[in-house]
Each structure stands twice: as structure tokens, then as C-alpha cells.
Image 1 (spheres, rainbow, N blue to C red):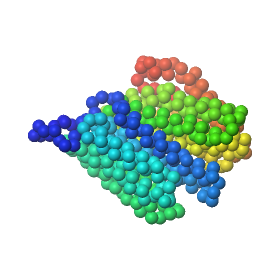
Image 2 (cartoon, rainbow, N blue to C red):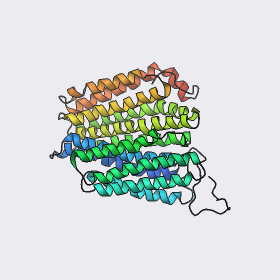
Image 3 (cartoon, rainbow, N blue to C red):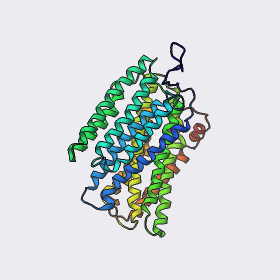
Image 4 (cartoon, helix red, strand yellow):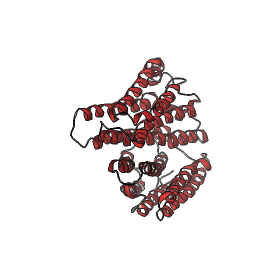
Length: 406
């Protein structure tokens, strides 16, 4: 969009369209708030288990995932927005700072999002989304197709935010149901009203999501430190090393080949519906499963490090192994969505991890973590050796897309 209006004057509020593919410092600054949001979500998940009060452990897990879903969808909206407008030009920068403040308040409210801070969370969430819609409306002044898409998004956003306000005055199962409905309707809006009008810069969009995966993986490292609150003994040291092995394996699964292939696939897609649907499905939706898997893993690591010699209860054991399995399944679905082929070994590893959950409740937590680290390390080693030639070609830009392999 031009920085000047039809009369040749600079508008009071301007939006400059993005021209390059680099992620700006302001976007990285904005993403720091998501660090706190993710930490708060894993704390909400772990609180009933670690504190041992009357709240069922599964309830904390469900609440944490619901809040994470809403905050993720807020973050996704700004990833799409800043792939259209330059966030560091004009008054867009100031609105981004205001959205950051509202996002921060929402993150601070996470522990009480289903209790005393429910209404404040709904207000902060509505403020974050309203700023997002306002900036998108500004960016779409000269693009009718984009304007129609933004209006549709505004409708689903209003419904989602409205349900959170209603949920603030309820509790129990009704409150959880309203949150779940809000998440489905808010996140499902772009799927229902189509993907024709959206715009994005492929390299920027892919890099932004890669960076948020790194932030999520950082939360798993933080969880190790939070869990190791007692004296540092041999068990804690071993658990910390194994935790880093697990986090490094998940990093490898994404960044070794997948991230490269994903960006090239998005760049080569036909602009318009095809590219937008790939971005929506592979990044907005499937990357949430990756981040949710990492959050579950972080919860499991936090409980594991709290007492490495004890057996894990069912919920933290399912979070530890199931989180890693969910992360792998998201990668399987990503490949199926974009390459129309199945990543058999990642699928098999995910199935094995899920099958080990009943055994994990009878093993010391350290043993369960060791098994998880060993299985992920074996998966990485197998893929690195089995598809060595393909990996080399993809990583050195000799082959644009991976026809087979991880």
C-alpha cells in the first residue's frame, strides 16, 4: 500500500506493505511475550500435579491446552499480519506495542484464566485481537479480496472473544465447554470462509514460525531448571542431560530438513488460494500441534525433575511421552499435507511412545525419560544414515523438495 493517500498527503495512520523476507527486531521483541505465555501455560498444566490439591490433574492439562490454543491463535494472527505490513513503519509500530501490552496482561492472567482472572483475561484477549483486526483493516484499504477475508476473520474473532466473556461467568464443565467452543470457532473461521484473499511473504512466514518453535523448545529447557529445585545430585544431572538430548532431538526433527522443505514448498506454491491454504494448514494449524506437544513435554519434564526416583502418575507420564508423540505426529501430518507421502518411521516412533505410557507409570521417572531420549536419538540416527544423500541435496539446495525421507 502506498504511504500516501489519493490527495498525496500522508495519512494519519499508515501501513506500509512488507517488501522483504527478513523477520524484524520488533517481531522478535513481540514474540518474547509468547515466552511468558508458554511458561504460564505449562505452569497451569503442572500445578494440580505438583501441588497435590483437590483439582484433578487432567483438568489442569485441559485448561493449559485451551489457554495455549487461544494464545497461539492470537500469535498466529500477528504472524499473518506482519507478513503483509511492515511492523516497524508508521503508527503500526505503536499499535504493536499496545498489542504487546495486552498480550502480556493475558499471559499474566493464565493461572487464573478459569477463576478470579477470567474476565480480565477475556478483556486482554479481546484487546489483542481487536488491534490485530484494526491493523488488517488498515492494510486492506486498497485490496478488496483481503478486506473480505479480514471481515470474515473479524466475525469469527468476535464470536470467540464473546464466548470467553460468557465463560468468565461460569465454571466447571460449562466453562471448559465454552472455552473449547471459542477456540474451535475462532481458529476455524479462516477454514470456513476460505483462503483466497490472504497475502503473505513465504520466506518471512516460514522463518517466523521456525523461530516460535525455537521459543517453544526453549520452554522445555526452562522446565528442566524449574523442576530441579532441590539439591543437584547425580539423578538430577542425568535427567538434565537426558532432557537436553530430547530437546535437541526435537530441534533436529524440525530444523535439519523439515523447515527447509517447508519454506521451499511454500515459496513454490501458486500465490493465492494454494499458497494460503498451505500456510494455514501447515503453519497455523499443524504448528500448533508441534507447540502443544512441546508444552506437554515441558510439563512432563517439570514433574520428572521434581523427583527423578519416583514413578510418574498417569497424566505427567502421558504428557511426557504423548507430548513427544504429538510433536512427531504433527510432522507426519505436515508431510502428508504437503508431499502427499507418509513419514513411516516418525509415525512408528510416535505409536511406540504412546504404547509405552502404561509402562511409564510403573517405572522411575528417570528411566522413562531415558527411554524417551533413546528412542528419539535412534530415530534421528536412522534418518540421518538412511537418507544421508537426500539430506545433503536438500540442505545444499541441490534438490528443491524432499520426495522421500524424513
